[in-house]
Image 1 (cartoon, one colour):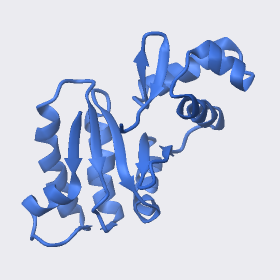
Image 2 (cartoon, rainbow, N blue to C red):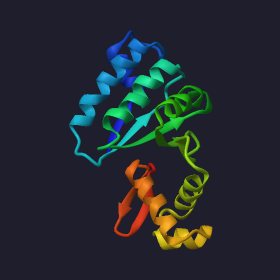
Image 3 (spheres, rainbow, N blue to C red):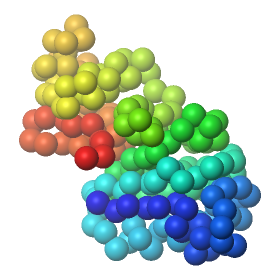
Length: 177
């Protein structure tokens, strides 16, 4: 697991003493500070992107830090945004929608949720996975009254998007310990 403390990275790439992620240039500098950290870890590693000390993030920084990281590394890494607050979502969610991306977020209370524009059935399946801690497609199909093929297709989509991890035949949601 890779812990990416955005505030710490911001302090190394910009003037110290503040926790605001504003301007595309700042976002690029922070992303450039994150990418070497990802290179040091194997594909399939979980990267925790920690927003807990970020006071403010604007759209351009969210695009550089969240959007570009997912576009460049989302095929190889699992990303979990932690410490996310509602005011962070105002910048992050439009970025995800613009790029057709989705990511798992754990807010400051520990609640897990999917961010991004996803079909309702995908959101329902993910909610069951979070509630149960993981499940096989047959259990999801039964719990939601879906056909087994539909449940398998949704699980495959969640896996392809790296929103769940396989554990044998079980699919588990991403979450912080």
